[in-house]
Image (cartoon, rainbow, N blue to C red; front, side, top):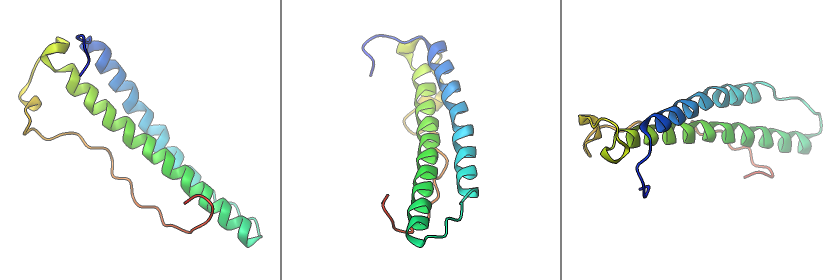
Length: 113
């Protein structure tokens, strides 16, 4: 918990920016996985494939973290200490926003496990 009240408008603005971060992260992961170059050398190819898969996983993790933090900021903006309106969605039993599911990437082995 922050020690001093936060401006709800600033929290909501930051949440909106974080939500926008997810779009290019998601699209970037798709693009990376769509461009697997063929090298020819098997060992180098395995290492490159593993590195590209790791990079795509990192982009997906950025997307998921941004969505989760944005949801927490939106909740914090509605807390009484933040000066924002309190709604029934703030109750402990209310459903919480969850990040997009990150599908398990196939593991091919290699250097980046």
